[in-house]
Each structure stands twice: as C-alpha cells, then as structure tokens.
Amino acid sequence: MQRHIVLGLLFMFGAAGCDSGTLWQDPPYDLTWIDTRDNNAVYYRLDNGDGIRRVGPNVVAVGRDEHFLVAKRQDEDDQIWFYFIEISKDRKYFNASDITQGPFGEQAFMALAKALGLPPFEHTFRSRPTDPLETK
Image 1: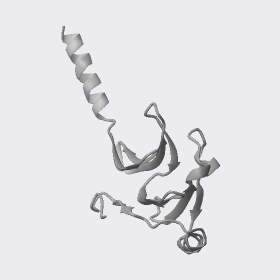
Image 2: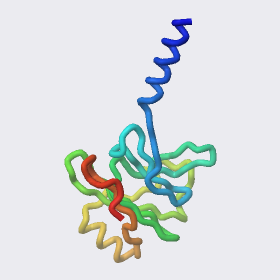
Image 3: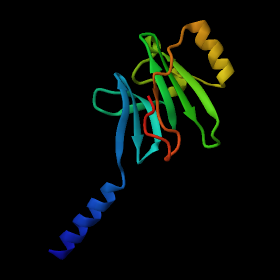
Image 4: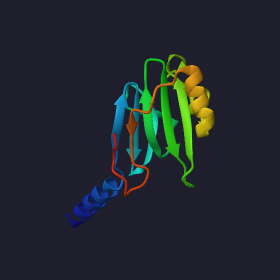
C-alpha cells in the first residue's frame, strides 16, 4: 500500500514539472509555451493536437493577415530577429526550414514588410520574466 502511495506521489510531482499554455491562437497557428513562458514558439497545430514549430523559441510578437504570419523573437543574447510565413504556401507537415523566411534584422525586415505588404505585429508578449505577460 505504501509503495503505491509513494509511486503515485512521484508520478504526480514528475507530471507537475511539465506545464504548457497558449498565449495566442489564430488557427492553424498558435503561440504556445512549454515549461516556462520564455520557452514559447509559433506552431502549426495539427488536427490531433500536436504542433510543428515554425518560429521560436522566445517569440515576443506576432501578427497575421490572410496572406502572411509575422513573428519577432529575442535570442539568448537579447538580439531581435524577424520572420514571416506566406500562409498560402504552408503545409502542415513542412519543417520550419521549408516555409519560414528569416531570420532578418530589423532594417531588412522593414524593407521586406514594405515590399510584400506584411501585416503589423498585433500581439506583443513579454521578453523576460519581469515583463508583463502581454502588453497589447
């Protein structure tokens, strides 16, 4: 009996160590975090609930219109990088390298945004644990 209680407690505490949540969703895309909110990424969500990563980790802003998805991420050196996906060309089983364009620096991305008509960043998320979770 004690063995079952100990095993149950070990399972419960082990399972509690892995948490996740969704910060933004516009199907089939979402911004989901795993374990910590800084460990987030843009995923293409499959019908079975699994996701295939498109941009990440540490995405700090996203935007979308009918043609493009845009994402901004902050790397471990606090450098900001920009990405975009042409939605009509995306397929659920593509790897990120097959469909995601980037990383781009800010100047190059702004030129692409103007030339292609990329959407603005509509949702901004914290970039460090002390920042607010969502600022817009």
